[in-house]
Image (cartoon, rainbow, N blue to C red; front, side, top):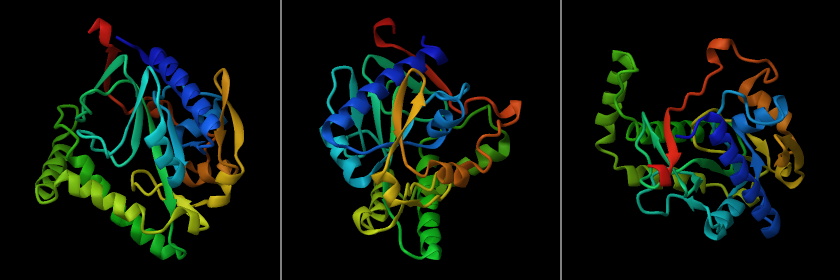
Length: 264
């Protein structure tokens, strides 16, 4: 089995290779979400966190998922058979990872999430409407991925059952296709404001120019890139992001069984 520190070590080495590949091929990326928060607040991983998230402008995202090659690591996206997420992952082929509450890509190992950044409409109310559509579609998609769990109370399992009933009328492939169609309504290169349009966390518009002036941030024993305006991005996501959450919230939300394939 691989523990939390072991996962972090694997992800850090994977991220170093992704960083080197992006530098060598002129591909832009930025740390995102809790990974960026960890870099700013902890100069590395959030102590209780167990994953790495990065953001890529759509042109760079497409270039990366079509060109990244590695001996130990594999990139997968929605164009790969059996993979049903509207964003890409790079995973370690030497490891296995089984999510306890969600159905997992059959060959998945310890992974890094890569989120595409797309253009936004110019008016804020249009941005919100598009985001709400994406949020509905993403929740519908995720309802097809979760298992019923004894860890949840009856009302949460009932909500999942209702979502599953609605999802019967929306095949997962069509939901992913609609999500990705909505991504591309506004070309990244043509819009001054961009965002990750998954509807997963929160709509936080980012100036496209932020991806044209990156900064290196300390992360564990190395440095990785972040958007120039990372302070406003983190404030939009988390409010007072330098403030630690209550102790009860200092725990990972992920539930994995992780190990080395050779030891399985």
